[in-house]
Length: 192
Image (spheres, rainbow, N blue to C red):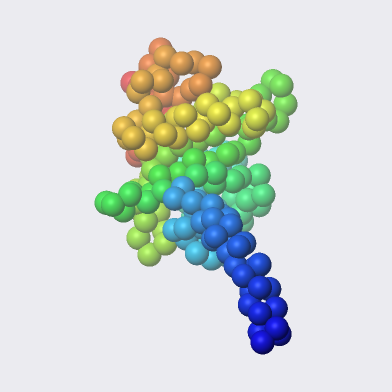
């Protein structure tokens, strides 16, 4: 009987930590984690390369249209270590929202910026894409809080219009220069 009591007390000791383990697991795959929606690392990397193709500098020999061709995929895949999907959310109509950390080049050297946007997928591939905002460039720890505020705003309203005059938050869109996201070329452009 004493042996049974000892085994039971050992089990009870470990059961105390079970709720903590469940909480830790839940935090790992939060509502805004890409792992919650896209299960394998290979699928996440493939999608990230697709996103990089839309948001990053194209190869010198590519145009706005040809940059999506298979011959340039290796160029974008080479940039994979420099990008990170910080937040990801799929809403009820299938729109995929993302907050992406990406490199930026400025006169201060290489820094980062965040891109917030939305897309629709079919068979794991992007069929609609739009950048909603691009933050100012800076050190990750300096711009992270601003990016998270913009993320919440974008999810709530589908835009960041209330921040449009916060030039210390947003690089684009910029109503003062009439800079907008052109969904035909998938680039930020001046309004004609």
